[in-house]
Image (cartoon, rainbow, N blue to C red; front, side):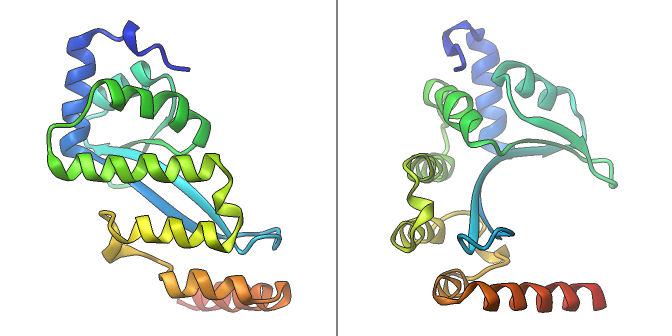
Length: 176
C-alpha cells in the first residue's frame, strides 16, 4: 500500500492539481473470453500529455501504473490494476484531493465503482446494474462502445449466442 505521508506535500498537491485538469477516471466493459460471465469490468485512471516528465513523476510517486507513447507522440500514464487503484490511487487522491467540483464527482463515482468491484459485485446482474447506474453519470458517456442495454441483454444470452455475437462483431471489424 502506498505510504501517502512519505510523498512530499508540494509534489502531492502538484500532481493532484495536474490530475484535476488532465486526469480521467473511467470504467469499461469488455466481452469476456471465457464465457462464464459475459463482461469483464475494468477501472482505469489515466493522464495523457505530450511531455512525459509529469507523467513519470506520477508513476514514481504513486508506485504503480504504466507509461506508453502513442503513434501521435502523446504519452499516456495509466493505472488499470484494481489492487493498484485500491492501494495506491485512491489513498493518494484521498490525501491530495481535487479542487474542481466536476473532478470531485468523478472521483467519488470511481471510488464507489472500485468498492463494488472489490466486493465482487461485477459478478452478478444486480451488481452490473449498480455499476451501470454509476457509470451513467460519468464523464465518458458520449463515447461508450457498449450501451447499458447491450451490457444487460448479454446476461440473458447463452454462451453459444455470446460466442456467435463475438464472431460476428470480429468479422464486421475485420471487414472495415
